[in-house]
Image (tube, rainbow, N blue to C red; front, side):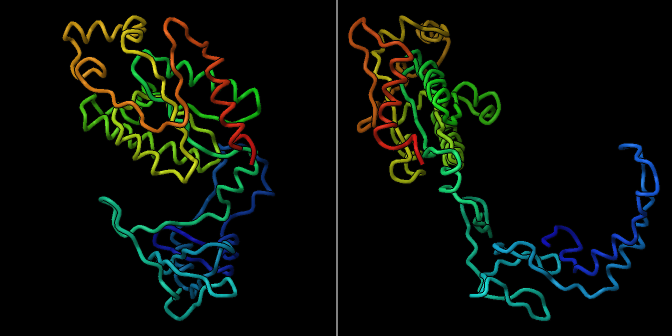
Length: 302
């Protein structure tokens, strides 16, 4: 049994002894959460110390063990068990990693993998990244797309640019460096959703090509579907659903994409939804185009 704290590993015999120290509840009527149990913690603590602690393997597929309160990364032998000596677990140690500012970390593999989750959901986990100017219809498409997939029995989750700034990215501004961090965070969260087998729909302006490409690089081949809302600036500014273009033109908002900050259009996106003159597809029609692409490329089956 893996534990955290001063008592790292407990033998089965010790577990039985602990149970014997807890008064039986069968002789008293259940009084709900208000019913208290007299428990001598010091007696239990001393009793545990008096026994020889024998480390045991709690999970058949676990590759990480705690010996005397210290985590050890070990690889299992051909029999699926870790070698044990008088000092606790031993074996072939896997290399710890240093990533960014995080040191001595180790990737723990789960026995239930992405393919298992996809088989359960009968879909392929992926990221649909909707990018475009403010007012181009990104959030509207994301909502229609999520609905269209939902009625087909597919599990989705939308990461909207404004929504994530209510919590996950509330500490970030709209300066270039903060925008890059905003996209990085959303990309990492989207990757987790995709690994869970969920179709994650990310809807953000994400104006810089390098940031979008960095998010693409987080996913395996075919796991990132870039959808470009190719709508002219004058059309977006005419719509101005939030009144932000008006504020930007008046100089009340600085660094606004399309006005005094650039938008770098995708070069090789999977899907481009273009507005032809004054004609514009409905949100449902655009969503069906994305869904058609997903069906053709096998995303809607395991």
